[in-house]
Image (cartoon, rainbow, N blue to C red; front, side):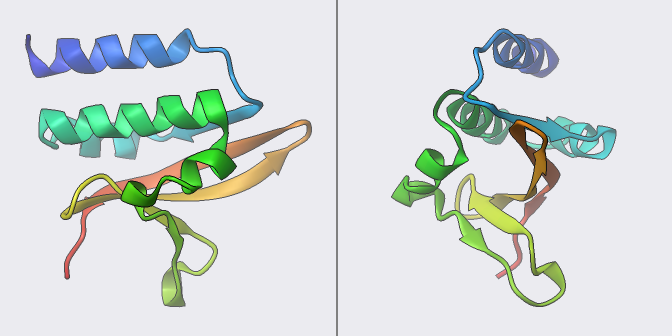
Length: 112
């Protein structure tokens, strides 16, 4: 299956989910970053989104393999989630009335 058709299928599955009261959003910039990533990383990204939509960010943070952690320094107020040893999601949380919005800022290759 071609990469774009897999990505479209994953995005369609996400669009049809019942939500926990929290919604994950991302920009065109993040879409472009996802287009350049390996398929397995893109799948992990959508898996994380689905987990947040179904269980809520508080429950997803408890998963030890994701290493969800607050960032410091210039990125204070942001959090990161590891998709694997090299790639991570950077996001922020905001309240929007009755629900929480998790805004993905970027998906990048972390430099150690």
